[in-house]
Image (tube, rainbow, N blue to C red):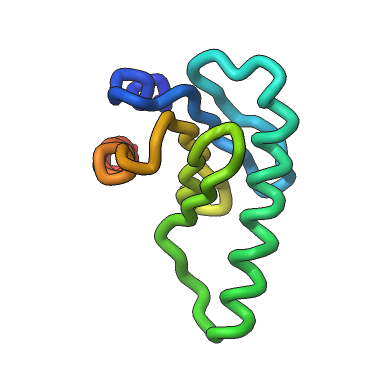
Length: 106
């Protein structure tokens, strides 16, 4: 499923993480970034929960984190989160389009 994201120029790797913080599926090379990616997803969940509590809103579309290893886009997929790590913030539009296209196929 998420392997299709690897065809998008600039995507370094992608993962789908369940509500328990476990990797459901992964695509592309991750190397030592694997634990850091899971920590980013956990931190992203905390930020989103805090914002939802503050705003009284239950829905979110995506969250961009621009970290030392490069930008990461977190997108909800039911109770799971799709993480797409990519090369440059300038690629954000292309990455968001590819993610939306992928989610439309699910």
